[in-house]
Each structure stands twice: as structure tokens, then as C-alpha cells.
Image (tube, rainbow, N blue to C red):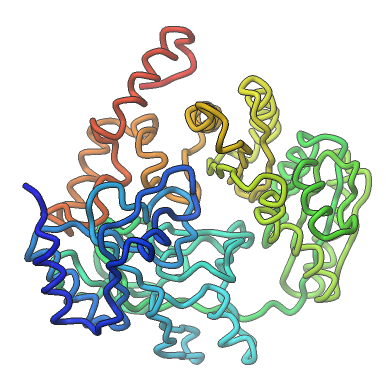
Length: 486
């Protein structure tokens, strides 16, 4: 049954300010993709609410007209989660940027979904607090998007991902009903619907207020930079450091391709240009604890094959070492304006083997791959570089991406760590989960959204979206039965 967009537009226009509705084709093109630019689809209509009441009105209108909707924050997602593939209203929360409450006595802050990640720490840093989850895009990504994807970041090794720091949610359900999930406390005697919502990628509703946990800034912070003759040696150093009981706040690896790109972006050699890989290790806590951990981690890096270990204790020096890691994606963009970011997870003990496998797959598919990733928790972010105007390159890129995910799964890993499934990886979800598992997940989704209006077609495999993937897996299984698991 075709959707009555004119009726929805009239309904929205009566309830929203004039500048809240985006109709012009030229303006809608700005929302034709998220951070994953390989696929593009402009929405037929978009709205930019400023309040929870407006969000509730919008979703009630969608429910009344049975028109699907897709939520979007800053648009920095990397799995096509905010992509409007089929006709749906795009609900953009970027104007909802208020900090609603700060409660330092209980170490919490409540914000609207459009608040930028780094603004949270900026709001409380003067009082000695900070917000731990720090995606590399933290200066532009929004808290609402972080909740949708359950984002991590550099410090997720020690402090966990977004779900470990969200204490309560105000949510508008797909029928326009306003409800609350979680009570703002660390522990609660109730079914954890808050946990179910976090990471649901916009399929259960839209969060309009989010209560976050704040942490006290550590007494001492130290950053180590170790450079290695091979990427596998850097992975081995990660394994050795974590195996001894040292728990860094973060551990990040960049390979030689990424080192060259970052140095070129800076215009000077911040990292050793001839290193096959560098490993950044951040340690924080009490001064005596950090001193011992830094010595031990340095010794283990050398034992694993590090050619040198540089130490930064001063805040400015630490920031300089981290600047390259935070600028990695931008640096690659200077070399190749089009690249495809993948997101898989492997056990730390498997890092050396999987990194070697990615190198071999890159050569087999004749596509360059740059590696930068959260090494401490095995969350890989290989960047596949390609030329958009090359015939058939999109299919080749996706085949390489699928092969990398397969390599992750073969060692007991996952197809995503923090970027989500979205549209990009839904056809691989059944590589990890049985039909019964997927059916159970769909039942949870239906409990929140019985009409299936929230972010349709995302996360779960569908016959339409995954027919080509299924065909390709059959072909791969015939040529190499060990490559693909159904």
C-alpha cells in the first residue's frame, strides 16, 4: 500500500514550526548517507525537532499514517544505520542540544540526544569529572547516536562502552508514547529495558533525554608509544601486556600505511616512518600504580620486539601522541577520498594471526587496507581504500569486507564491536546467530514496535536485502566449504 506523504506533510506542518520540515530535494541530498558513503539514498521528507514533545508528535503522526521513520543524529555512523533505503521519514535530532541537568554529587549528567560527545566532558571538566566513552569522532558525533550504536572508543578497554555509562533514558516509542527506561541509578531492581534499548540502532524508538555516568579525572596519566618491525609483533605486545594483569585505559595500533598517512597530514614525522606498526598505551590511576604499570608495559613491549618506547607524562605531549590516532580517518581521506571502514572483533590472543590474514586478503583482492584499531579489546577497524569510478569496485570492496569479518568469526570473534549492524552487515548476522536466536531478537523488537515502523530493514537479514549475499555465500561454500558458515 503506497504511503500518503502529502497527508503526513500536512499533519506535520500543523504541529511543527515551519523550519522544522525539510522538503526540497537539494536539501534532502545532505542526508543521503551516514559516515559509510558507499550506498546513498535521499529521504523523501525530513524533520528536525527541538523538543521531546515535537518528537512525540512526529512519531504519533507516522503511526497514524503508518509511515516508517529513521532516526539520525550527527550522521557519523559507519554501518548505514541512518540510511533511508525505503521510503521513510527521516527524524534528525541534531537540534536537540541542551544539557538538561548536572548532578555532581551523584556523578551524573542528563543531556538531549543531539549533544556532542566531547561537550559532556567539557561541561564538567572544571569540576574534575569527565565522560569516559570517547569515539574517534567524539568532536562531532552525538550522544543519541552513541546510544543507538553502543559506541566505544579509545578508553573502552578499561572503562567499557556506552552501555556501561548510561543510567537512564527518556524514550519516545514508535507510536508516540513517552516512557522512561532505567531509573538513573547504577543498580536497579527491574527488567533491564535500558540495556535492551542501547545498541538497538533506532529500531525501538528515539531517546530524547539520556542520563550519563560521570567519572572522576584520574590523578596521573601516562602514554607510551612503542614502534615495531611487524604488525604481528605489535599484536603480540598487546597480548603480553594484558596477560600480565596490567589494565591500560586504552591500547591502539596503527600500521605503516596509517603511520605514513598521519605523518603526511601533520607535515612532520610524529611517528617513526619506517615502523611497521606503532602501539599507543595509555595508563591512568594513582601515581605509584601508573609508574609500576608503565615500567612493566615498556619492558613487555621490548620483549615482544619493540624497537623503541617513548613516554609522555605531560598533558600536551600526551595529546600530541593521541592526535595522530584521533586524526587517522581524516589522514586516510587525504590519500583516498573514498574508503570503506569495517568493524570486527577478535580475541586478543588472535590479533597477530588475524592481522596477517587481513594483509593476505588485501593482496588477494588487490585493494589497499589501512589498519587502525582498539587493540586492547580486539576491536579492528580496517579501512579499505578504493576508487569510486572503478567499474565493479563496490562489489569487490564488500567481498573483501565480508572476508575480513569471516576471518574474525573463524577465531571466535564478532562482526561488529561498536559501529553496529545497520544496513551494512545485516546479511552477515546469521553467520553468528541461529534462526531461533534471530527470531527471539525480532520478538523483542516487536514488543516495542509492533507495526515495524522504526528504522525498517535494519539489523536483521531480509530476503530482499540479502538475496545477493545468500547467493554469494552459496558460491563461496562450493569453492571453499571451510570459508562460509551458514
